[in-house]
Image (cartoon, rainbow, N blue to C red):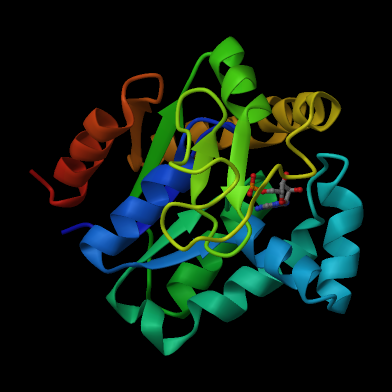
Length: 217
Ligand code: AMP
């Protein structure tokens, strides 16, 4: 089984949804830098204060800060049986730092999964996205409605719209993806680690494809 995994793709491609299902199925540690920042913002920590000034505009949090929190998380004991990085790395500097960290702690990356999706579909998904405030479960106002409006099916928590899921911030996020993150695909392709998947297909079908990859079948 492949156990040290990077999940890449533009905002709205389905990374978060797939990540949640994959870590449950394969018992991997889910490391989402976006979730870590949102948690810090909720708890009013100094990291949260710094991160929110970037996140709300759709900008990337500076590399040294982001690399620091990932380095600390990856070194923890529970990552030894496998982890799934969701939303990291997003820049070449982050990818290079991750390779170095992987060597230092002897946890190298086994595979890089890239989920791609057409821009109009990304905008449709992100602008209608709602997220549970408690457990982070994703919903959509048209295509993935909860049973009771505004309430999470899984934990009963309230649903909300992320501050950076508006048109202006999304444009900025997509630009950062094109300029800073997409070049990583070539970086990992050259290392023979990249596997591409179609994010516009149904979520269940994509999950089956990703599961087969992880099982190395
Ligand atoms: P996400 O939940 O992955 O969409 O991330 C939400 C926001 O958190 C991004 O738009 C960035 O502002 C910030 N962020 C998350 N991961 C990173 C990263 N690897 N590098 C820099 N900023 C990040």
